[in-house]
Image (cartoon, rainbow, N blue to C red; front, side, top):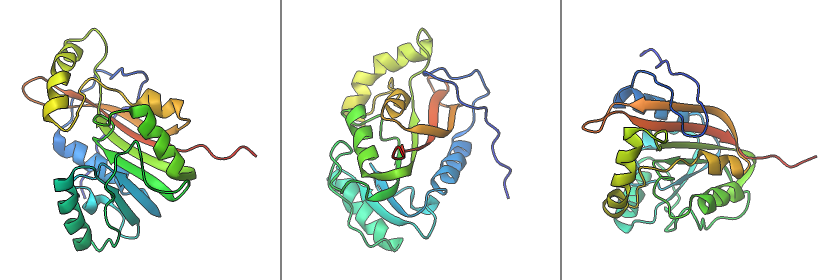
Length: 214
């Protein structure tokens, strides 16, 4: 068995500690480990073409949400191959067509960088979760202000939003998650090797939705 990747704890407000960058393979391992923790009724927002299927625990009851028609068709086919019986939802994260408190966990990988309204999407995630439900998000995030990396992100974002399914290189969703009432259980900020612009800041976030006040 491969030894787990050692990473430092998170710090707040988009500040990524100066640590040695990890590889994309190491990041994939961390993502799979995080996704593999969720149980019960799981909603995957922005599920794409189903790249995360192999990471989910075999006993989860999976529902996918994907607004892109081409990706959704491939997602539906792969869902059947993985023995998931639900049809992927044609919707955005800002308008999830599920009842309040209907899922136990929500997963999103590289999704909050591309939604139109992060606060609205996070509010919808909280709405469909049961009290105390889990969220798992993985996203590349904004580099610290004043850095060359942040400048590159700011310059590139108008292009990436147009070419790459609305992707914002200079966005950080953690403040919206906190404002929505989620509590981070495990929050890691890493740097992942990338060419040609240097390491990419990445957020791995596992959090819990608020429970009712007794």
